[in-house]
Image (cartoon, rainbow, N blue to C red; front, side, top):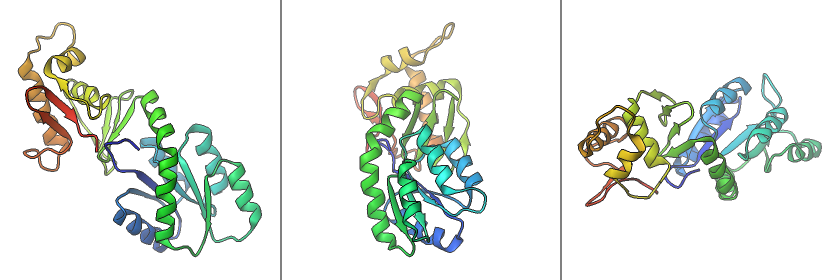
Length: 236
């Protein structure tokens, strides 16, 4: 989780009622929630945006949750909470050995599980932030900016098209969350050979970005104006 965005929780559960109830509880707690009904859906979601915590049912129709936990841990420091109806202690031990952080059995109290999620997010946040910084992936307000793929993904999981200039300005701000960058600094970070770039260009690019990512572009909450200096990406 970045300072600027809500924590992203992925629920992997094949039982629709259980999944929807848990999603509603976690959404009410302020988390950004994604849902997957099987392993294939989970892999698709994770390929777009690695969550902060995965609530992973062991008994999925297409693949074992234990195998998925192992694969997730091999690639990331993502928090993993195994969820199952089984009471077998062997599954719990194996799951923890494969890299899961926690284990709960059904039926569970959704509010208690939300507390477990929040506590786990606090533990994994530093390592997840370091991994995303190293990979060039930045999150803010539910958005995901992949600098390697030059792709912006909305909180709904949709790709948003940006021009080269828009992308470069947003990337510069995302790499410095909470820090005010002057127009000159943004110009240095975004100009390309052969292009005539002026201060006013930055204002135009920021205006276009706000129309694409802000709920209310006239009252921006993500890209903020720092009067007398320039712009910054909200840090909270």
